[in-house]
Image (cartoon, rainbow, N blue to C red; front, side, top):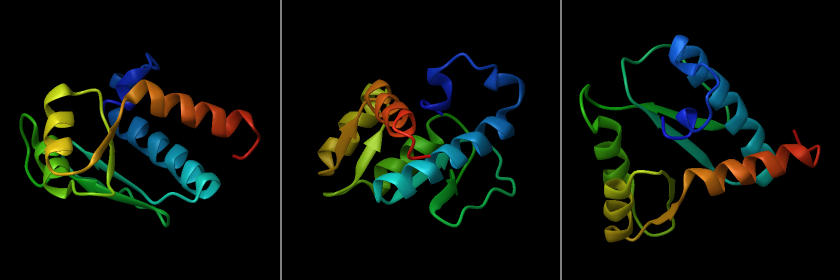
Length: 117
């Protein structure tokens, strides 16, 4: 949700639509970069599948639900995109890498501006 919320696109009016849009963007990124991509969403699960991006909904509802799941998946070789300082600390403590939302958004934009989408 940090990545979705990084741009004032009106995503709050259609949260499921914003999630679908992000998954489509991540699919194009995964295809262009060759990097495996997973996304963990907060909120109530709904039908949202991808052939190339692993889509996961938090295992519970409530505050920091997705953060807790992401932290439990963190290990060496895993890169987590977040702007949340607490989650970043948990990921690093588990041996994972952290990439800020702005830096990742820049990579997404550069990937698509090269015509790789």
